[in-house]
Structure formats: structure tokens, C-alpha cells
Image 1 (cartoon, rainbow, N blue to C red):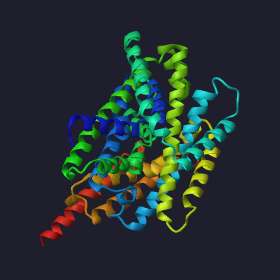
Image 2 (image 1 turned 120 degrees about the vertical axis):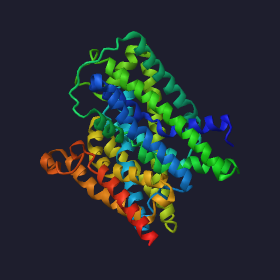
Image 3 (image 1 turned 90 degrees about the vertical axis):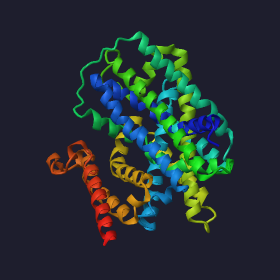
Image 4 (image 1 turned 135 degrees about the vertical axis):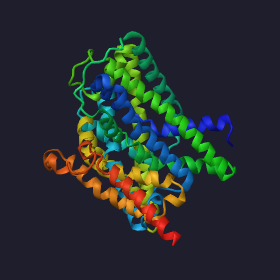
Length: 425
């Protein structure tokens, strides 16, 4: 089970799971804005967009379950509310974002049609595929990811050999924490808990190997997939940083990715990239809506129309939100991510921990602490509705919008020490 072929196949499956079109548009602009701090931004971005999602896969390998199992040690009610919140966010934000990316990269440059029309057509097709569960998506997925990776590799390598390693100045004051927060927008940690179990189920159906061998396979494939993601993200961030003199400072994420492709590969390759990204967007949207409908169907087994109605609702939400531009959707998503992402990260890390360090008591104490200290970060991300900045200054790391980190760590250590002390009595 743990031979090289199985490891590579599983690595590719994990990489395909995480690497979607949304991941393409974030790193280049982050690098473009970071200047000579690109390496520190890349490190922060990789913390939340690579390391945490891979930890989520390792947690799935340990639990052999679904998203609902991630929070059961806190309480069944909490786990249900958390699962519903995750799925609500998924169909309201990352799913519509795929339609917006498709419109801006593959429709707007060639056709003078409104975004609403693109969104209606896009999610009408998504609905058809969700209802019919066509295998065409699986076939497309086998070719899409390698093609996109190949094109990105060409863009990165071309930039390395044609541009000077000369970086401009940056206005970013907190490059590491800004990289972490931008990594939230990949939704990959959420992706790890939502659909990571699919990989585990597939392995279980495919093999009767021991639990230890399966866990070793997933661990090795996880780290290889993580290394691949880190390499591509860092390459895109560095490519963006080296192009600081070639584009306008107020360029959008889509415009920069399109410009880098055109600059490196010419117009024809740029069209090809637009088509591939659009198809990758489509498969992601279908996966999100299908996963959400499956979850609701499982929670309401007596209601035979639960799957259909959830699919309809998911596509209607997609149409409403998908008509907005990508930058707007990312802005709207930020407050929700500031609240749900810390909780997701903590659940992933606690589920990876050895059992003696992550008892139900520790789970409850750390998760409750994380929720409480995520609220100021959430409020601080509300733009014009946010409280004054000095409201958060008393919280360590609050100025970096990471105010939950040290309190959660402190409660984790203290609660374990208390449990250890009581058990010794």
C-alpha cells in the first residue's frame, strides 16, 4: 500500500483537492505588493495556505471521519453548528467567487456581456452537473490540474530567466501576518475539513491495508503535496515581486495574473490559461454545492427533497453573489474568515494532537477561548463598522489580527497541566 506509485497517486489527488482557481489569483498580487519582503510574506502565506490544510488531512487520517467528527469532542451541538456554518460560508463565498473569476478571466475579455448573465449561465450548468453527478468532472480533473501547473511553471521559470531579481519597496508593515491572513482567502483549511475525508474514504475502498500503512501513506502524500503547493505559491509570489515595475500599482488580482501569463507566454497561451482556470473554477463550484447538498441530505434523511432544495439554494446564492467582482467577494469574505478560520485551525491542530494532550476538556477550553478572542479580530475586520483600533491593543498580537493565538496556546498548556495534576492525585 505504501509503495511509490500509491504515494504519488495520493499526492496528486491531495494536490488537486487544494489547488483551485482561487489559489491562482492570490499569490501574484501578494508578491507584487510585498517588494523585498516577498520571502516573509511567502512564509506567512504558506503557514495558513499549506501547513494548516495538510495538518487537516493528517487529522482526517487519524479520525477516519467527516467534518462533523472534528468538533464532537467539544459537543455534538457545537459540531453541528460549526458544520452548518462552514457549509453556509462555502456556498455563499468561495463557490460564487469561482463564477466571478470565470467572468473576469474568460468572458469579460472576449464578450461584452453583464456579469449577472455569466453568473446565471454558470450556475445553471453547475446545477445540472450537481443533479446528474456526471463523471465528466472526474475526467476533466485528471487533465486540468497538470495543464495549469505546467503553464504556471512556464510563467515562473520565464520570469526567473527574463527579469532581474530587483524588488521595489513595499507599504506592507506586517508582511508575515499579512501573508497569514491572505492565506485565509484560499479557503484551504476549510477545504481540508470539508472534503479531506473523500481521500480517506477512497483509500479505504481501494485497499485492505492496515490502519498504520494507510496513515503512513496519507502522511507521506500530505507532505509531498504540501511541498508542491509551497513551491508554486512561493514561485508565484516571487514572480509578482519581480514584476513591480511592469504593471500599475492599483492592478487587480485577475489583471495581474492575466498580465503575467501574457507577458511570459503570449496571447494564445493566455487564452488557454483563461479556459483552463474557468474549467477548474467550475469543478470547484460543483464540488462545493454537491458536498453541501450531501451533508444536508444526511442530516435530514426523512426529507427526500433535501438534496434537491439545497442544490437549488446553493446555485441561487451563487448567482446572487457571483455577479459581483472578485475583489468585492474577497472583501466581503474577510470578516467571516476572521471568525471561522481560527476555530478551524484550532480544531485541526487539536485533532492532530496525541489523545493524552487533547481530551474533551482541553477541546472545550481551547475552542471556547479561541471563539472569544476571535470576536475582536472579527469586529476589527468590519471596515467602517469596526471599533476604534485602540480597542484591541490590550490583546497580545491583536494589532496583527491574530489575537486568538496566544490565549488559545496558554489555555492549551494550562488545561493540560491541571488535568495532569488532578490525575496524579
